[in-house]
Length: 172
Image (cartoon, rainbow, N blue to C red; front, top):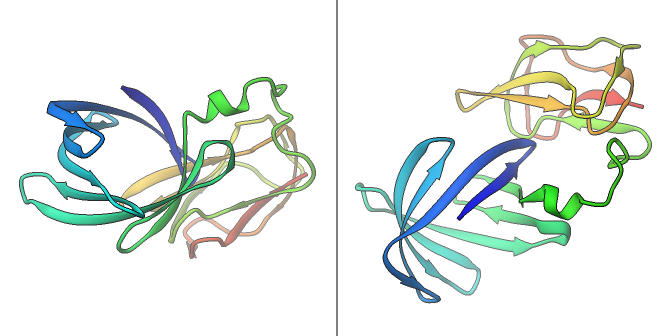
């Protein structure tokens, strides 16, 4: 099965296939995330999943809490993330650009460094237009506008270190 998973604003394509027999009690799976694969033994727990990852056989417990519209709050040992699985399916029926009403505050999804700012105050932007690029954990995360509008404020500068939740850009 292939899914689109959005984690803190970054879209990833995730494929999961059973390796051997797998069922409600778990099993072994090959997981491919953006063309990188890893083998995982997964077992359900009361709070989510217990995973044994890769050849190193590293064990990780993951707590998963269901939220509205396909969102899941995922708690890992050193980080918590909000993930939306197949979010387009849950947004069907909404007109393009109507997904966000009012002033929208674009924040850093995790600690990192601002690599590029692609807009300035007063710029008109389209829905899903990239606004700022934040590097976190050696990956660049392009943060886009949730709606068509005008840039009210750019709060940070290029090269700035930011913590998770730090305000970056305001779209009105």
